[in-house]
Image 1 (cartoon, rainbow, N blue to C red):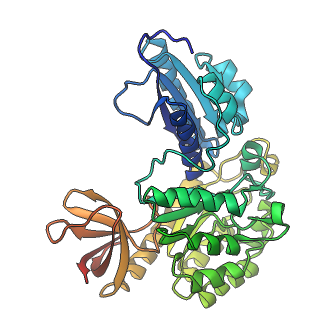
Image 2 (cartoon, rainbow, N blue to C red):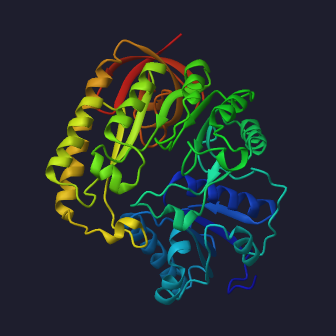
Image 3 (tube, rainbow, N blue to C red):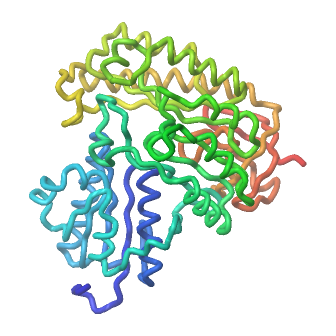
Length: 437
């Protein structure tokens, strides 16, 4: 590859958006490293002459962040700080013609399935034999494991199928090989991700096989925790609950985006469920796995969300008492089926409703945390920050959930080690404790 610089090429990969994008960037960097190319992730040194931005195109805020990042790097290319700029990922997949017209200082745009093309432009060969090998960007003791790509669900508000295509499961054998490689490199916690974990296996095995996958992954030496992210509620395979309950390596935790509870909203969203069916599913979760932490995400301000329908959602959150919860404001996305509806909830009302639910959840989280005082939990430690070692229980995922803080003056803990911690006090989102034998 010809550039203006005389120095050896160095590539900086910038990742925006969700954990699926993090995974894709890690695969890209693994391929580049295997080609003996110098690559770094979100380097602060500014010493790379080639930049690749892996974009997100999910909702308005994410799109805005991606565009701002592209513009910022395009400006750096203009002033000679970098030689080449490439853009890949969801935003590029969805809006490539528009981006090519509007931001012309990018050398080339690539979609979500264009990894071989991107590598070729970067002067690298796509190595098929690198099954699951990648340069992880997370702390070395945990890693994401993407078990499927794409989504077959018809959700009215969601543009993911436009950007990621139809659901495609990765065979169990391949995932086991990838997980073994991760374990050899020190990974103790696998976080299973996909656009839809619930659908896993239907396309290649003609039946849902998430439970079978969990069993196979749990056999891998060195893996101690397996965590489930992004399970779709409709058609959830009940045998997964048995595995969560009976297998010590599978965390008592699930991330299951429910989005809303009002029947009319759920019908318009094309979620394939109802208020009653959702409650029945949650009841099954709590009966089968009584101590399971349930994380969900909700959308407020969807077209037709009247004050009465919002109050139904709010009351349901109060009654259900989720362990973890996030709230998005509705984003009116072109080429989705909801785009033909009138975006009839004002932005300020969307924001107020988001804050109302999150304020309610803060109180729920505080109440649930108070019940943990005096109890002892197995904790995996992620980092040291200030005067504290910071870790997580099996009920908490990195970056989004509660954390456990242990004073660094009281003990020494290596990052990536487990320790039993007795909780002495809590606040809304943090637990404070001491290490016990």
